Structure formats: structure tokens, C-alpha cells
Image 1 (cartoon, rainbow, N blue to C red):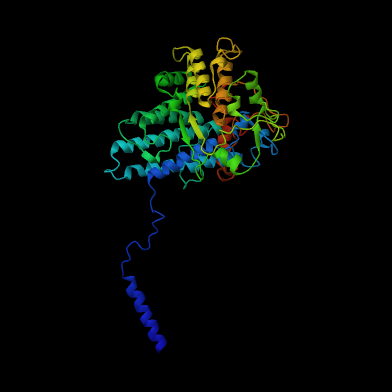
Image 2: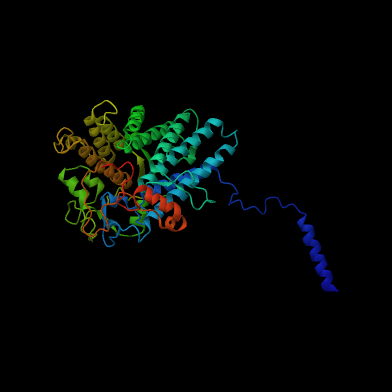
Length: 473
């Protein structure tokens, strides 16, 4: 009887307690139920910068495609083995999931923000910032793979999105970019402190957006010269041509927001990379003043690179310089050297008026200034000076732009594919010639087989040697 009475009393207490209002005691305040658009935007920016910067060969092997660095003991990636580590799939997921999905969700939530704190002009600016990064990320995917999921991408309910034609995607990206730039109100705010690239400076975002327009326009110049000319002539006076305006993220001196090169080369304690002889030999031959700022001295006190694609003794050769491997070294998305070289090319193509040689020299000077090297004697050297350097304008600009894009492996690889200079040679034991695209991810071949097969056929075969639509030479 006592036992029954105890159970009845207990049940009564439980039932009574269910009527009590415990307020937010059951709410975990450390795990918000909704994420602010600014947080998602920050995450997308950081993930994009990390992807483009990190030397981890599971994700980013572009410094080796451009033959800036080579490997020591494990030389698979320098010989273009992309499949053992599933590198294309890792890069694909890093951009689609970690960058584009966060941007998409941020844009979905921007309109719902409190209008008292986020007036319409601010929301419009925020959306424009997200759009500019969307264009950056999607154009990177196109330049990696060719045709990609675009119009049906980012819908997690659709595990088998169709692939869109790469040139069609590019045209839409250019339209989106133009709309985003035109919508910016420089007098209003943006993401403020959540913006790790510009801190909410909308004038900076507008200049970055126009610089990206110039880059994309020149990439398609051999495919659609009319569109390229129209775009570059409109933005030429407004792109980044001073290092004061460079688009970069300054990493911090302590984890977790440290320079990804430091993470993979110093924090990890690994000794996987040395300078590639391809790059160092060209720089030494031209008496390039940036050599000691790009690389350390070798074991003999000079500057030498390991044989590209071969096993190389780490202690023997030059390594990435101390500045590059500092934990707080910045990562660049667009700089003055690139802007000036774009203008030099635009003059040579007849898109804008001006002096190609002057822009060429300004590009070299901007690069040297950034690295704290003196460009004066270098640009006057007959082997470097625009009037006397070897080759046509593509060779001159292509070679010097490749040198200036050190530590920006993806852009260096892209420009090499466009200019075909300098002349790079695959190592003797490479699995292929130098890749001009990534192959599609393994997951696409299995989970999205029909659309994968259609895309592969459309581009001319899912091979590293299949040229993209803009790669005409």
C-alpha cells in the first residue's frame, strides 16, 4: 500500500511539474537556433581564402601545376596523380559545401534581418558582397573543371543536379557580377566586422568586383573577344592597380585563424616541399630581385630548386621564405600586379588605349614593391624590359605574370593555360602532360552518373588534358 501511495504522489509531482513554465532553462544559449547572415558570410570568406591558399596536397596542388614548388619524398602530386588522394573531389566539396552553401544561406537570411538595424541599403550591400564571392567561387570551379552543376546546384534535396555549359555559366556570372556592383551603395554599410576582407568598406568591394570583372573578361578573351572588350573598356579605370587596394585576408598569429601555409609546413612539422627548379632557374637567369623574398638560401648559400617531379633532399634546396610561412602572413585574392598585367594585355588586344609596356612595368614594380624588392634595375634589364624582352606580347606578359603570381598557384596555373608561357614541361615519370583541368570527382561518377556522363561527353572527355572552352591555344 505504501508503495502504491508513493507512486501516486510521484506521478502527481511529475504532472504538476509539467504545468510549470521554466522559461529558457532548457535552451542551450551556446547553440543558437538561427545563424546570423554575417556569421555565414564570415565562414564562407574564410573557407574560400583557406582553399585558395593551403598547400595541403589533399586539396590544393596548384603551386605544383604552375611549377612554383615541388615535392621531396612523396612525389605523386608533382607527377599529376590526382586520384590517390581524391584531390578533385576534396576541392569540389570545399567550394560547393564550405563556401557556396554558406553564401546561399546567408543570402536567404539577409532579408529577414531587423530593419531597424539593417535598413534596405545595408541589406542590398550585403547581398552584393555575397554575390561577388559567389562569382569568385563559381568561376574558380569552372576554371578547375569546365561544365559544372550551377542552375540546380546547392539543393541538398537534389542529389543529382544537371551540369551547365561552362561558357553559359560564365556569361551568367558576368551578369550577376555587374548587377551586384551596380547595386552597391558606397554610402551605406555592409557586413561590418563580419566582413574579414574589407570590414564593410563598400568602395573596396566595388573595386574588387570590377577587378574580378576584368579578370573574367580577359580569361574569355580568346573565346568571346567582343564581350571581353566591352567589359574591360568599362572597368579599366576602376580596377586594383595599387598595393594599397589589394584584396587579402590577414591571418592571425595564433590558431585557429593562422596562415594555412604555416599550418601545413610549420605546425605540422612536415618537410614536403622545396622550390621548383623551373621557377628558380628562370628567376636566377633574369637576376630577379624577388628571389630572396620568395625562397630561403640553399645549403650552399645560393638559390636552387629541386628537380621538378623528382625525389629531392629537403636540406639541399631552397624552401619557401620565412615571410610566407609566418602564421600571420596574408592570403591574396587579387592584387595590383595582376591588375596592371590585365591592362597591359588589354592594350595589346586593342581593348583599351594606353602603353602596354608601362602597364607591364607597373605590374612588375607592384610585385617587387609587395615583396620589398627593388625593381629599378630589373625592369631596365634588356632581358626584362618590354621593348627588348624575348618573344611576343604573350610571352613577355605571360612570363612576368607567372613570376608575379608566386604563392597564388591557382591563378598562376590559369594564366599559364591562357598564355602558354612560360614553356613548362611535365616530368619524365608523370602520369600525364601538365593538367589543364581537374577530372570530375569520384562521387559524381557514382552518385550522379547520368549527368556526369553527359557532362564528360559535352566537354570532350573527362581527362586532365581536355581543354576548357576559353583555352584556345
